[in-house]
Length: 196
Image (cartoon, rainbow, N blue to C red; front, side):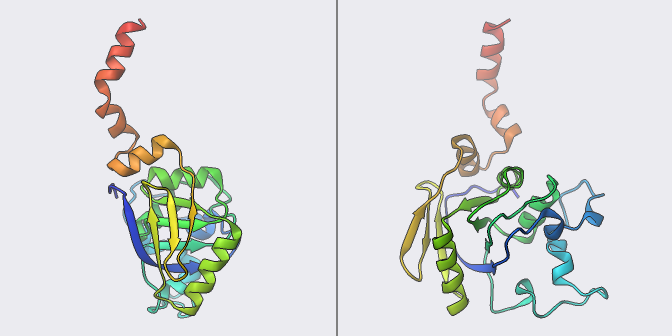
């Protein structure tokens, strides 16, 4: 899942629902696993599958006219419990970016820690994205991490988004927290020697 992040241009999968919580993203019955592998197939499990395991044809992830590595979600995405498994499922499915007008803080950080970029946009821009995707399921969005912009290529409209400088550095360089510490080991050891 560790991938360097620069500029991503992709079509999108729309989920215009507000208050999507982590239990809807990955139901609690899947939390016993401690390995990140395989969570993508259970992303939105109860919305994607019938009880017999067959696909629910009316759910957006099962609609072949939608594709891409960007999820466009309604306001207050990732609320509820702090389970990191929700971010594992999003990354495991293949999403690189989630766009919403508001994220629950813990879930937002869990996405960043799993190399998924949460992009916060205004409610007006989010509505425009949903409208563009509804009109043309192939609508493309460009997410430019170095310049911190997101652009709806159907309209040409862009917005700037905020990101913690440390997390931006880690995403751009494909580093998790441990990788970052290892990369800066000499600085850590020099600080420890100086501050004994």
